[in-house]
Length: 388
Ligand code: HEC
Ligand code: HEC
Ligand code: HEC
Ligand code: HEC
Ligand code: HEC
Ligand code: HEC
Ligand code: HEC
Ligand code: HEC
Ligand code: HEC
Image (cartoon, rainbow, N blue to C red; front, side, top):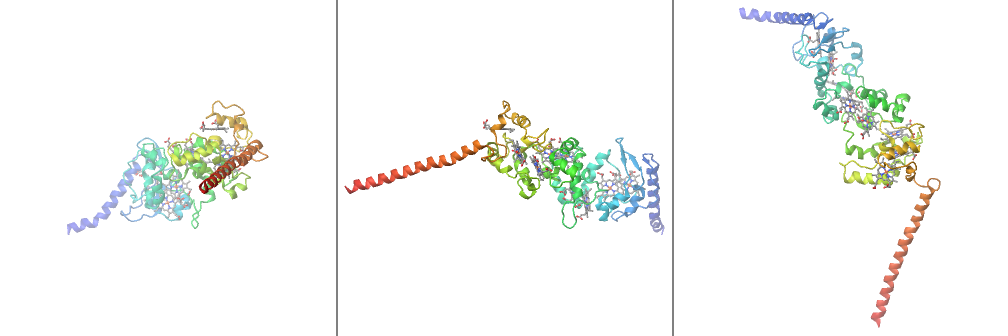
């Protein structure tokens, strides 16, 4: 009988212990502005209503001083959460915070806010395994594994409590607002590159005019599987990267830009070699110029830009001199840019080409006729000799 009574009292006792623990946390002094802990903890495994968590976490200026000395903001903006994609999809706090059942919380092992970010993001794998496995192979993950805690994890690019929808739910297409925001996402950590990109022909079109035809960071680098862009392979594939858009007639027509870029590049003395090179030794970086050696990378400008444009001989010469250190001011004349020689542009080259077009078939053809007539003559003579 006695045992039974204790069993009856157990839930009550457990409740008392929980309230005491919650109060202890509240009174410990590390937590400021923590609200009254009068919410009961739910048994493990059972989904806790978001309002239970938000009862405390929606309070403004709710902070915790972590053991490393930094302050962690514990406030979750209820309004922003409800408008976020996870709020809209009715994802429970505890679907991500799987080991939380109310208060008190599991022991906090992280000593800084950054350590929370770099350990808690693994919860995303439950529902986004596709993106998660791509990331495993990225420069960011490699840097993180190498101990660089500043490398991007999921939550640096997607605030789990505030991220709004990025793609159209039905078509899966990237939303316009999402595309416009991408460079800023990367700028959080790559601000120097962003500041350069912002003023480039591509970046200015995107950030100032909302033009969606130009590349953002991810068109050139990828998103979840970003690779090291300083490798030989990346360098050798640059012409194909740019050609994705610059050889596309429909896209380029709107800007009056030539799409003969890749063809003329591949057929000139630099490009021919790069194309062959890429096929034969993909792990060696080419020493011939690729698009970015002449045009720049994050600072590409209009070719006729009065300050930086490379249609201006002096600006182009600087680029040539990197590899042809002795080049002087008329050196770029030796090269035809992206033009195919015609009677108007480069008439000399055109005429020389024309000359060779006739001269070479002429000589070879003449020799062919000569050789054949010689054979025929010898055959006839041999036959004549046999008849005698
Ligand atoms: C009684 C108020 C209260 C309730 C209810 C509450 N929390 Fe907390 N939460 C806190 C306090 C105080 C901290 C500071 C760390 C600590 O004391 O454990 C915290 C810290 C956190 C942290 C960050 C640090 C850590 O411990 O990992 C997360 C995440 C968190 N809470 C999630 C939740 C979730 C999810 C719920 C709902 C299941 C919830 N909280 C319910 C008061 C509360
Ligand atoms: C989609 C997953 C997800 C959902 C849903 C979610 N969280 Fe979080 N939460 C995280 C991750 C991951 C972190 C780790 C910190 C970071 O990187 O922002 C975190 C961090 C926190 C923190 C620590 C402070 C901070 O911002 O780093 C608190 C407090 C917290 N969450 C409370 C909540 C509450 C309350 C809810 C429900 C209203 C909730 N979370 C819903 C994933 C989620
Ligand atoms: C319990 C499941 C669950 C977890 C865990 C979860 N999410 Fe989600 N997430 C969803 C659902 C459902 C959607 C809506 C997907 C859809 O409609 O295509 C979504 C949408 C998203 C989107 C927008 C996708 C789009 O196409 O617009 C992003 C970004 C995102 N989640 C990031 C994260 C991150 C980062 C984490 C980890 C902190 C995380 N999610 C954890 C369920 C989850
Ligand atoms: C370096 C920034 C960055 C990191 C890190 C990152 N994402 Fe993304 N993610 C983006 C951008 C930008 C987009 C939108 C572009 C797109 O969809 O092609 C996106 C799109 C998404 C989408 C929408 C569907 C899709 O694939 O296009 C989901 C879901 C998502 N991310 C989840 C995650 C998860 C989970 C992680 C961690 C494993 C993660 N992301 C890490 C930047 C990042
Ligand atoms: C939270 C900070 C953070 C964010 C956000 C971030 N990165 Fe990074 N990124 C890093 C760190 C740290 C490294 C490693 C740098 C190193 O190893 O020198 C890195 C490395 C890289 C590299 C390889 C650089 C190299 O020299 O090998 C590329 C490319 C890159 N990031 C692109 C992006 C793009 C594109 C985005 C946006 C979609 C982005 N990053 C967002 C922190 C970030
Ligand atoms: C038009 C294509 C293109 C766009 C757009 C672009 N990049 Fe790059 N990026 C490259 C190329 C090519 C390289 C390789 C440079 C080299 O050979 O060293 C590179 C190199 C990098 C590197 C590593 C080398 C370094 O300079 O530190 C980072 C980090 C990087 N880019 C981030 C970004 C970010 C962030 C954005 C958006 C603001 C962006 N990129 C936009 C093509 C691009
Ligand atoms: C050896 C230097 C060099 C290389 C390599 C090079 N370009 Fe150019 N490019 C130029 C110069 C100089 C101009 C301006 C003069 C002209 O119009 O030909 C130009 C012009 C352009 C233009 C403007 C065309 C127009 O219609 O006004 C585009 C676009 C372009 N290049 C893209 C590329 C791409 C893509 C690649 C790689 C496949 C590439 N370039 C390789 C030097 C180069
Ligand atoms: C996602 C498509 C896309 C990619 C990839 C791309 N570009 Fe562009 N680029 C454009 C568009 C669109 C414009 C026209 C922008 C404008 O004039 O507002 C442009 C403009 C230019 C111009 C200026 C031409 C002029 O004088 O008006 C140059 C040079 C250029 N790109 C070079 C490159 C190089 C080099 C690469 C590869 C490293 C590259 N682009 C990759 C879409 C792209
Ligand atoms: C990234 C390095 C690089 C850049 C930049 C570069 N070149 Fe070259 N160029 C080469 C290499 C390597 C060769 C082959 C040399 C050889 O085989 O002897 C070459 C060959 C040439 C040749 C053939 C004649 C010769 O000297 O062998 C001309 C002409 C030439 N380049 C002009 C230019 C012009 C004009 C520019 C600037 C618009 C330029 N190059 C920029 C690397 C470069």
